Image (tube, rainbow, N blue to C red; front, side):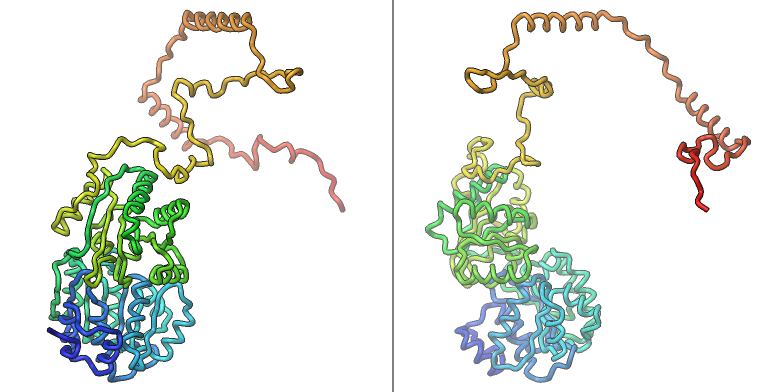
Length: 509
């Protein structure tokens, strides 16, 4: 059996790995580390939760023991799609590099430029950043990329989804062509393969599992629901209560940031201990929320796909997909937050009738059929408006008023004259005055006579509509008249002088 001692790592790195309690490398680590130490380009493909981060952090620490960084000229560059992933990689360097004296700079959004500039001025052996913030520093003239020896592109498929590929291409042109490139991805669609072919030179392909496969230790189930949001929220709450005894902690994924906020508030109103994590939150709030979930202070975390990639939360027991992901690959990453390092986990996905297309794409990608939990869509009871157990979730119509739910026949009477009220002196309250029967009879007869007169009235003669050709001819004549207008040119306002200008005013000498 292969151990870390067999991979060729330096004694300092091996000591840190031993102190962390690891002795046996994962398949991606055993396959990638020896080639990385030989300074070969690597194309690493492995599903999430298999230890991809350590497969490039450990050999980089060994290679960086020789040499020294210069100011504003980093020696290595690691690109990550999100702030959380970048911060997590920095934590790995701190854990495994505790016996090294390396300067690690983290460049992410939401942090002051001045603090990051101070780190760059000291010289960065390892530069970990998101593409946008890196380009900001380069455009300010604070970075020189000609000294980069190793380039790591992590979660490349996520980079593609987030639209970072043009930025990565710009960054790659700033780095010497002789660099070593380590390219890692959980899935390998054709677009990522083309990108790898452009960036890598004769790479060593390390693939430890089938692309887009799911861990066998995860129990996957589909939960049928009606399509309204309040009905899906009720289905989710019932499901959480059903499996509550087995839940240690859980992540609930939504497709949109707005849905994250709405679902978080709904769960709080119904007594669930929950937190929220999405891209519109400031960096301090995101960090505190994620750390609180790691520490066990929060049992449920409602998140967007910002939490779906690479976050190291080792013991998540349940994953709930409130929305079926639009991209099938996102399903693999979402449920990969559970069942990590050989642990068992459970993943539930709420499915409505309009989700059949995306569900088919997911099952085609993972090459397996997902079982239904308590019956499929055909077993759903009829949808009842307002039957959601959480009626507080339903919001009033715009403007704070419920919509007019009257029958069409009643809508024509909206503007009827208000009822006449009279004061009942005996009772001391206002009461509507009753119209005498004789007045009612006269009103009905008057309306009938008016309708009869209208029906027998002679219709006006139909006027002949001028032919369009005549209109065109008249328009041409008008244009010719304006062009050949030889009349006198009016001076000033002409005959239309404003009245206030005709009044006399006394001039002061």
